Image (cartoon, rainbow, N blue to C red):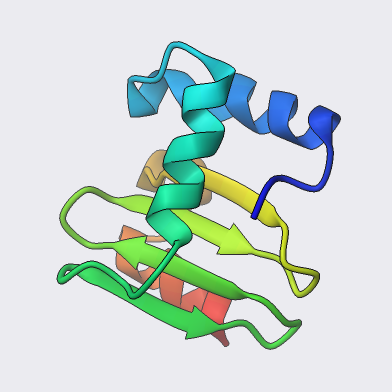
Length: 98
C-alpha cells in the first residue's frame, strides 16, 4: 500500500522522517508499509475511522499511521503532544477513531 502519489510521499517524508530516524525516502515508505501491514504489533492499537480507513498507534514507540478509505497511506509519524495539542498521544489517537 503506497502513499497516494509522489507529492504526498515527499511531503510526509519531509515532515516526519527525521524524528523517525529515516534518511531515505524509500526507507520511509517501506517502514510505513511494514508498520501498517499484517496484524498490529503487541503494543499497537488499531481502529476503523468514521470517515473510512484505519489508524494504527504503537503505545511504546508513539508511531502512528493512517490508511485512507481508498487504501493509500495517509501519514506515518511519531506523535508528540506539542504538535497535536492533546494532553497525551493516546488521547490524540482516540480522537481520530471517533
